[in-house]
Image 1 (cartoon, helix red, strand yellow):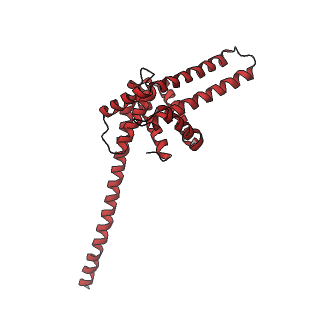
Image 2 (cartoon, helix red, strand yellow):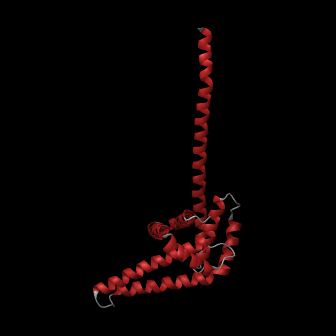
Image 3 (tube, helix red, strand yellow):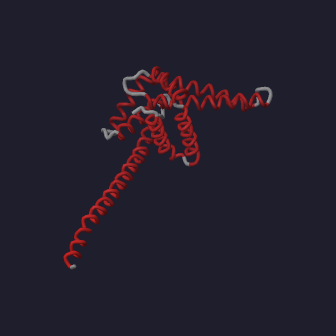
Length: 221
């Protein structure tokens, strides 16, 4: 009886060890996953500051957003991702994409003018003014989303015009759901900046992360 009891006790030990090991491994994986997520969030905050500074001339806004997306992709791929790499990609994007960014701003300025006219009461008839304002607002949001998706899709060495055409097809034909997901980003960024201006930097970083996530959702690395 004593031997049997001893054997029974001895036989239960390995099972307990295996269970404890599995539980410990699971806890370690959970802690590592949480740490990875926190590190990604920290990168979003950091790259948001870089993005804000790099976009201050306005004409460099889309190139700065492209560089921010590239930084986050490198971080997710466990590649070297520092301010030097960000600055180098930003310089390349500005050199090749400032004309595209200027056209993007011109389109937004034209639509903003339409919105101003529609809300000024110059147009005859209330329903007409409301309809013009609604169309201009939707078109402006579409232009913003298309520009952001173009910047997220761009890679160093790629042609911005060709990338823009591909982004239009992807945004409104192949993956309209991703465009709708991204459409809320500028609104959140604007609200954050209105509530507390210093929040615009982290909000921009999170917007870049959202654009990267939308492209990865579509299957583009």
